[in-house]
Image 1 (tube, rainbow, N blue to C red):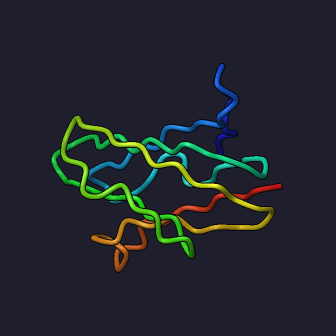
Image 2 (image 1 turned 90 degrees about the vertical axis):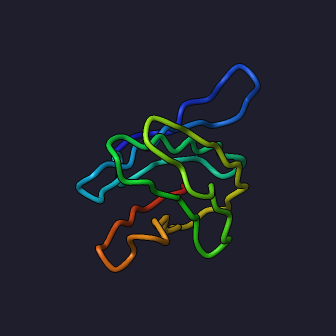
Image 3 (image 1 turned 30 degrees about the vertical axis):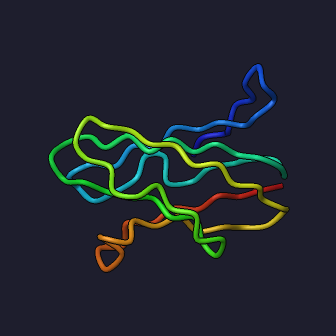
Length: 98
């Protein structure tokens, strides 16, 4: 589990990695209500994406040693994030906003 940190611009940020074992690290993110910037960094040779559901904001495909960020505004609650390419392999995580 990782908690989002607040940058100098007031935006909460967190970096998530995706790897060849088809998992996210961290797979659980704690955040406060408001804006959150999520950066997906792909490690290994398997490309991944990260989609926050149900808001359906997606990084697009991120290749090896690349990264891409998305920004979402979240209210209190629990949100899933998934790799749409590896969903059947259970490549999922959770954002707990409280």
